[in-house]
Structure formats: C-alpha cells, structure tokens
Length: 115
Image 1: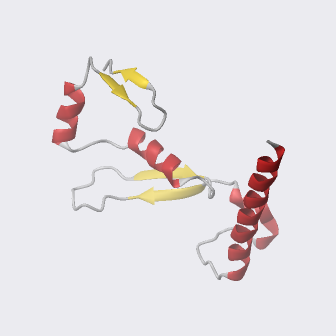
Image 2: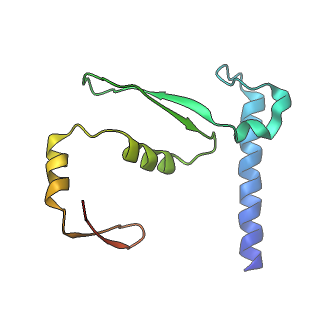
C-alpha cells in the first residue's frame, strides 16, 4: 500500500541521514574519501583484508571488495561461498548429505544435493 511505502521511504531517508551525520561528525581516520565526494563514497567498494583468528596456520590471505552499505548477512553469505573449509567433520557431513534433500529455513525452498 502507498501508506506503507511512504513509511518505508521515510525510515530509509532517516537512516541515510544518520549515516551521513556520523561521517560528518566523527573524525574517522580510515575514511579515505574526501568530503567533496559526498554520497558517492557510500557506493564505492572498500577493500576488506581478512585473516584467520582461530590460531590455524593461514596459507592464503583473502581480500574482498565490499560496498560500505552492504548488509553483513550478504557479506557473510558471500564469504561462506569463497573461503575454504578446514573443518574435517563439516566436510564429512557435506559428503554424507549428497543425494539427500535439504531445506533453506529462510526461504522454505527445498534442494536436492547433487555434489
């Protein structure tokens, strides 16, 4: 409905204003963009350098480009797809479910595991 759309747009605008105010009010030293760049800085990808924190020997460093307003859930989903798994028990579990059906709890979509 139109009333809900207006409320959603109002909440979005308030959130955007809050992001802009934070950038203007706080002395963020890692912010590499000049103030003249304005909102364009919110859409340009930032390089995220990731390292292992669980004490394992890391053979490969991972660097990902992400937009500043990217939702953490989307970043997590992407990283889960591109980072190698070193947990032997989890890998064995993955091999055991081949040929079975699984269900995504968020979308209620069902999939058959092929490989």
